[in-house]
Image (cartoon, rainbow, N blue to C red; front, side, top):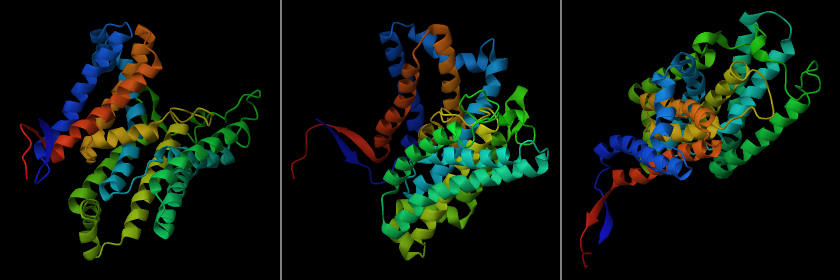
Length: 360
C-alpha cells in the first residue's frame, strides 16, 4: 500500500529540488501534449527553450527577455511578501491595469508638453499609487470586516478590465486615432516614454525590477520586518504573541504588492506596449503567481523563475510562428508548470511510504 506520512520537519532537499523536478516533469508532459497535436516534441521543446537564447536570431530574442521578464519579476516579488505572510493577493492583474491607467492618465494630461524630468517621475508615482490604492480595497476590507482577500482581489480584476476598456474607448481615446480604440502612443512621446534603450530591451521597468530584487533580499535576510512576515506565515499565534500587528502586516504586504504591480503596468504601457488599449493586459498578474512559487518566494529564485517564464513566452511565440502550435497549447504548457510544482511540493512536507498499513 502507498501512503503519505507527514514529515517531522519540512525537507530542505525537496524544497530546493521541487522546482527543478517540476520543470522536468513539465517538459515531459509538454512533449506528450505536442506529440498529441501532431508535432515533433523534441523540435517544439528546442524552439521554446533553446531558440530564444542560443538560436541564430537570439540577437532579436534576448532583449525580449528583459521586456517579458521585468513585469513578471516585479509583480511576483510583491506577491511573495503576502504569500510568505499567508496573505493571498490573487488580483495583481487588476492592480497592474489600474497602475497603467493612472500613470498613462498623467502622461496624457501633460501631452504635448516637453519636460521628461517632471512628467516621467509623476507617472511613476501615479502608477505606484494607483496599484497601491486598488490593493488597499481588499486590504481594508480584510482588516475591517475580515472578508476573504482572495475573492475580493480576484473580482476587482474584472472591474479593472472594464475600466481599461472604458478608458480606451472613451476618456483616453486618441482624438487623432481615426476613430480606432486606444490612447496616444506614450512610447513615442519622449517625455512620457519609459524606454532607456530599445535595441537592448532596456526600460525603467527592468531597473525597478532589479532594485526590487535587492530590497526584497535585504528585507527577508536582514530586516526585522522580513522576519515578522515569515513568522506570521509559519506561526500566526506566535507572531501575535511577539507583538506583530496582523492588520499592519496585511496592509503593508498588499500595499507593497499593489504598488509594484502598478509600477509594472505603468512601465509597460509607456514602454513596450505603448498605449492604453482594450487588450493591454496579457495575464502578467496571474503568471506572476507561478513565478513566485517557482522561485520559492525567494528574491533570487523569483529572478531566475521570471527569466525562465519569459523564455517560455518568447519560445512559445517562436513555436507558434514556425511550427504552427496553437496559442492555447503554449498556455496549457505554462499552466502545467504550476500544476507539477504544487504536486511535487507535497513531498516537502510528506514522505511516501510503501507497505502494509499499521493497525493501531
